[in-house]
Length: 310
Image 1 (spheres, one colour):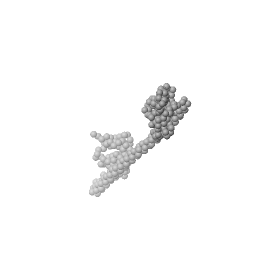
Image 2 (cartoon, one colour):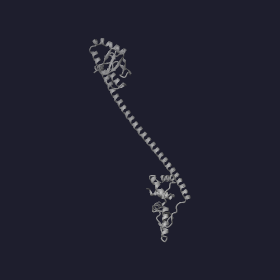
Image 3 (tube, rainbow, N blue to C red):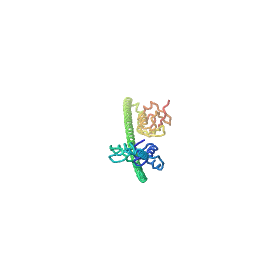
Image 4 (cartoon, rainbow, N blue to C red):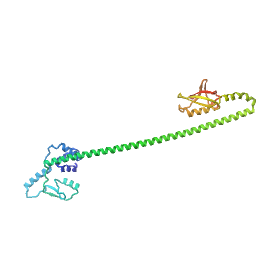
């Protein structure tokens, strides 16, 4: 039991027994709950207070030993306050810092009804002030918690945005790297195609120079075809049903068409074969080394992506 709380209630004019009981009944939670309990049980009957018992005892002692002096209270020499017991005296000393005390034959008079009412009025006012202070403190604590919650939310949002920005940057860097690799691969294929064209030109040139009479009749038809069709338009149907259309030089290799599909397809990266429907023809690995005009894909054709044959 908190003797400090009991003494505060005693100083307010409550009986010691009631003060102690209020502290016990409220679970020793402080002055305010104890005061509220006392206000609610103000009319409860209690036994005689310590001061009254002391007064009755002192009267008895006075009647029996009128010749002797009996200490009825303790007095603070610094402020002249009277205290009924040493507990109240020690609390006063701790609170005020006073150290000059002495026993006194003066009896601490109990409060009159008017004094009790005045103390009760002061007690109610103090309770109201305590409630206001508590409500203000709770409101301030709630405001501080809300500030902390908002600050934490902002910090979490900032951290999330930073993480998203880092992920976006990482994805962009990865795509940039992939595009660079694709460009390198595309340039390598183009270089190979150009090299193949140059080799074929040299080859055709040598054959023409060595056997002019034999090559001339055979070369007339391709030259006429080249003159008529220098490009071919290919419609490519992907496995997801979508179609891409691209124009190629008739002398480009079928391998260049395959590379173009791999770089521009939208149906994934699964392995595939190329075929035509009319007439039905599935192109083999040997066909990829042949130009488009030799494969009958001029001036236009439809290529279909299919799964590789097992």
